[in-house]
Length: 511
Image 1 (cartoon, one colour):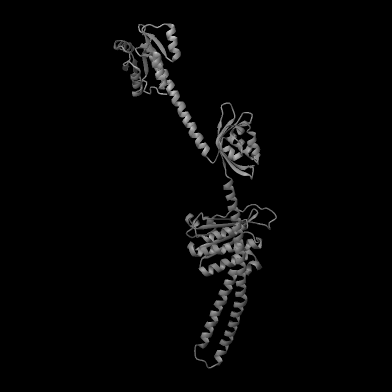
Image 2: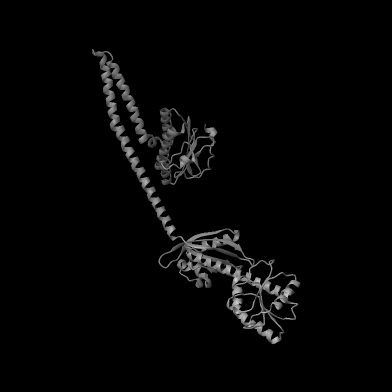
């Protein structure tokens, strides 16, 4: 509906439907007396009135009661047909109550006699003001309708159900609004869910968890973020409720949010978890196969190669012992002794390789002895000082845990030799509360976040997989005084009594 949209302090625009220029001037003079400087246009027929209404915006129409070919009622009807909501004021030479009543019933806003125009200016001001209020109200309604239409279009296209849920002072729940997505999510139509909110709660598998989440959100006015299963016609669904609470003036809480179907993501999450479990089982199987192969190779080196080297050494020693009695060329005995020394080195290397592949000392003397032996070999081979601390002589984890801790120690020492540029390594074996901990520190260049996130850091990944397969914990980070700090913690299955956790020794005391 068209109406004036000018600012309130702008000059009034008056459309005068009048055939007399003198009478029109009289009307304008009354407006001048009231302090107005109106802009006006005079028309005297239906066609001219229609053209003037469509040409520009007007604040009010002042129409003579009777015009040749156009009465005030006809002019009013024309304006209404064109859907203009403008103050329409009838001006007559003389007016009786019946004429005024008829004009007012038809939609005129006021009627004045030509000789009684004292109230004309205040009446126009009032009607213009009311018309502008009506226009503002209609504009607000249109904006509200557009906003509601946009909201409904958005809500209907969301992959879930938009809702307003209210908890009264008595704790009862009821829906104030639900979008069309409720039918796809719960199998209930909007009016069904609005009329019987109990059906929503009955569809929840674990209703108590939702009620607890609602109570916690209402108590602390925190965001509600709940996941749970609902009973579906064919199979259960997973939904996520996420909303923000708002306190009501009359008591109670209101949540506004969205319920989404997360069944697919939960299925993918389950598949990923099962895949992860299968990968862990495969990794554990590969580690077991690797250990068996190491044991076989170590046994072959010890039994076959070791015995062969021993036999060669014996034969070489016998040969070297006979050489002085023979008239052989000078230096032949020295060659034999050199060969014997090479055989000794080969035997030492074979023994070291066999120990690294499958440390027999681990089975025979336990984890602590194996760690000490490995540290000694590491120091001799690399020249890096390696110290071992053990808090308790009785630390003896089960066979799988002992082997895992030993292999991690080997990998860690190898990384220190390759990358750390360290001059000292400290290994500590200790017992915590219900756990066995192995810590390895060095004073090298340390390890950065970029090093930890390298896509090809297979050594660290292998350590994590091995530790996780035994329900252990693995951490690696920069040390307090530089270098790196690697820590392993495994459950102590052989410990019957829980002891107090040992305090971690400061790094400066270790170095």
